[in-house]
Length: 430
Image 1 (spheres, rainbow, N blue to C red):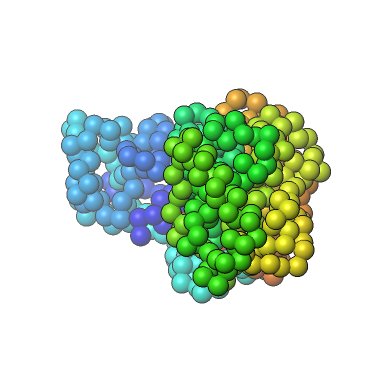
Image 2 (image 1 turned 30 degrees about the horizontal axis):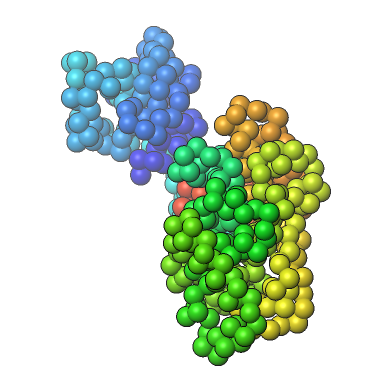
């Protein structure tokens, strides 16, 4: 496997005996070079002493040396600066586009590395490297978790940047869309994101002093003010209680005024959804937040502590929804505040990533630093991914740690990309 040979070269997992080229010249690898995952040679700027001469250049790696020709490197000038060709099997000489014959080194993947890699790839246990977790040094764990945490925030930053780009460069609107998506709490995330793109905030802003009109536009754009969206046995009650009819009439007026069109209501999921998470409830909470003018980017940037973030995001429903979960269905009175767990998730998945993304966009490192500090102050998430790592003996102290572990599972463990994982490295070299 060529990728495993790349790994062997990168980490200098060489046999104890001296390395020599196929023509007998001694080889000393001073620096294996920078691993290149894009087009071109596999390692850039390697430093290699061959036969007493120090060479600085590129290294190409193949399973068989004949792969050089199969991949067309003999006609590609990007490979003219290859100073060493490394292969498991040398089945012929090679030549560059400018007529040079690079020396070749036959190198095998150590048997223990191959065996341990097979174990990682084939085990059904999660995480596959569970056996070494208790023995990892605190430095190894801390450094890898810090890198994963940054990687996850960078990934979220890119998603937020793309939203801002789609919204003609408006980071204010991108904040709203990001928050709305996370109000879906997984199941309705895609639907909430599409809904948020469908809400014309410039138009809503003209009626921001009326919570009723804000809610009318929000509910209407979600497609929830059509009578056929209400179960047949609730339709009569919905019309009789008056609120649905008033909202619908107001939305029809505003839709005509601003040329609004509701989204496809079939995108919403209700099956196996707790009533607290019904779109009606979440949209009412968002309407309240918007009406109270707590969805501004400058307001978020002013937040310095977790308590300030909580105060910013804390919301409840409008009065009608204190006694309803859907139109026409009466329920016991409940102010339906966001739970602490929901607030925690909104801080982790919305407020902090947006703060980090804005910091990167505006070159304000203090905002990025604050994002990391806030993650470290938040309690760790409690989900099956985190619990599995804890059962392996990993100490989880904050939301920063849990975000790192989620990144580890999704981007490394699920993809069996153990060769890029520092825990995987410790497993392979044991």
